[in-house]
Image (tube, rainbow over all chains, first blue to last red; front, side, top):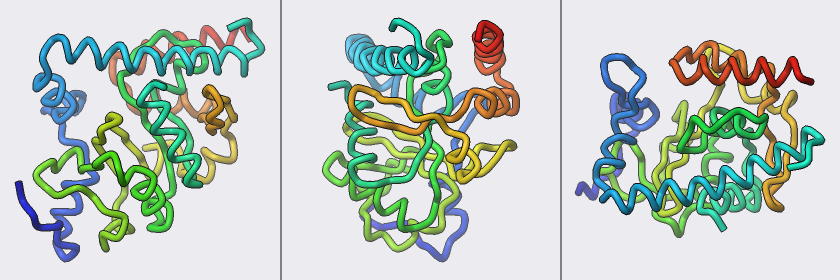
Length: 70
Length: 157
């Protein structure tokens, strides 16, 4: 693990921060995939469950905004 | 509270300017879930980026694409030079885009946005027409599928 902050003089370093690293198709976020694969199956399910709780809040808020019942 | 909601709560409490875009916005309009993270559009002016980092200071924000680098600090001098901010925190990932690629910048997105209340966290959400345009530009299979749902929802009024 580096202890050095990125050099503001190096545009390549800055671009490495603000550009998604993808596969050749440009569709697969390789960092996100690597993160998921670094988890155990149980941890992946736990992450999904946590995000699902957030999605439920968003769905309810959206329903209210659309004047629906949910 | 869901970690992602806590992320948004911290940003709003810190006065960060942002609009919710991407799959989460699509879910808010009624599309089935096709996302597992939250995408925002926000001004990349240093002041706003610093606010983001202050809000997340105690959840170890790191550059998602450069996990080899130290935890990002609000006083890092290069924060005003970025086009996008991709972070991973203890509350989950957070992708903040400086513009909606091929569609519009933050100011236009914010002007058209709809405010939704996510369990007490009032957030601007990209309007449906701009969201559809953004999904069309992105053009991935799940984006095109989402457009189908959004167009159907729009027709239903």
